Every structure is written in C-alpha cells, then in structure tokens.
Length: 146
Image (cartoon, rainbow, N blue to C red; front, side, top):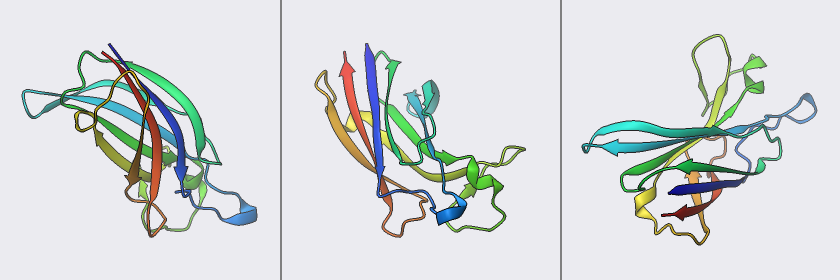
C-alpha cells in the first residue's frame, strides 16, 4: 500500500521578500507519523523538497504505509538563507544549533479525516507561523493505493 503526495505550491507566498537584497528560498519538509496504542507516535517516513524561491514545487513522493488510520502528515516550510540576516522577524522560529534555519510555516494533516483513494484528491491546508497576516496555504495532492 502506498500514499503518494504531490507538493504543488504555497499561496500567497509565505516567505519574506526583501527586494533587491534577495528573498527567501523555502523548502518543504514532510514527515509521516503513525499513532500506535492511542498516544505513541512513530515516524513512518520523511521527505524534503528542493528550495523553490517561487514557492511552486511540483514534487512528488511516495510513502509506503499499511494503513492511513491514525496517520498524520507534519508539514514544515523552512529557509536556510534567512539565517544569514541579522535582523529579527516576528513569526519565525530559529532552529537551535550551528545551522541557522528558520521555519516559515507549519501544519498538520490527520489523513484519516479525508476520504483518500486511488483518485487524486487535492487538499489545501493553512500554514501557521507565517509572515502573512492572513496566513498562507499549502496545496497538496494525495493518492492512496490501498
């Protein structure tokens, strides 16, 4: 059994655009988590896209998973380039350590809340912790082959 996820785009852009000095080059991290015994969660797989300044990705990844019951997809949008800036920004989280990466947004999707099947199903999900007052949404397409 497999779950194919296509990461389409983020709209409106969640990154920070500072004009001629450059802008963000975000990438998306997906982590598929599976719940066991009501509260234990284990990672069932992960995937990271390439950086895309346009925030249009068009990348697919297939996770091998027995069942989507109790499965959730954790989505994080990160940027490496923002760590080189020396100004503070509201709405961003800095990852501890040597690498200075910033989270531009995050979301969680409970897969068993959707009727996923072998027919592609587009889902848009609001991202939290973004620069945009109204927020940004990530557009994904799910195909589940049971």
